[in-house]
Length: 153
Length: 296
Image (cartoon, each protein chain N blue to C red):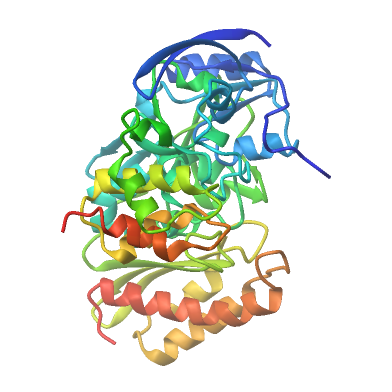
């Protein structure tokens, strides 16, 4: 199996990396130090590995890194600007929407994706959109409240 | 068997052809040992679980011809690599094909819908595939192409069993051809899952053509009740030519209930599927009838 050089932009910076055909985007990101996306189920059920790929909510555990040549990836850490947290992340903290924290990066990316498409979702629309993101602490209520507060009121 | 879904352990070559011809050339070169990857949401899970081990993956991601919709005077042509989200967002689908639209809306979570494709949903040939019953009741056809040539296959002849279709390993689904509907035609899709966006315990699609108070044409398909998505021809015959009444609806639904052959599995039991099938068929018949302009 050959290695291939790919160029992809991660959180605003271009990376030139060699990947094998079977390298998963999730594992490439984590090896490069982007540990926001998490390995949860590995089969597309839990959403812990969610990233934005060319602006679209995508599961990085079911994406081949080699297919991301010349694409742009944004992970949860990419939402913040340096030390300045993204308003969604700040809202998660203020609402106690983080318990064990494992689902949080995926939740934030999914919430960002939702608000990009629909800046003013209802509570029901938020719950529907997050249906692919599981919180094993079952702390959904504060998560939904944290996102609701960031909608255009 | 214990599998590690954290990594993809298998080794394979990977190609991103830029045209259908180039993809077919590669499929032919690998003599059936290559697999096509579109969204990868089913394929990579099967590879992680060591259910398949292709020598090469041929990605459709750079073939723009497979990612568009075309309409002529007779039908809507949906490119095989159109994603579930793109299909749901298409205005013709939302306006005319209620059953397909409802099926797409019921499927998976947003990330999977951004990744998974309509051609992939069919080629994966799950008995529970949500796009299959609607496309079956529309009498859809698939355009398949290999290096040897092109053929058109009615969807009802496409599925052979769980994970098995008439698609040869060197063949590619090019497009799904869906005949246009008239105002006097209506369709509906219903599904039961454990939670929203779940894989179906059972799903149902109905298409009706109305002539006054009579049902002129009826097509019914159910999923997750047999090794393949299933048309229930005997039930359709009961409805055709008849005045559409509550008693007819019950009769047709009971016939569907008689004809399905579900199994017990992790998502549901045989018994529950049989009980609930009649209720779902009744509801789907009513919805499709109202949409065809009929009254109840």
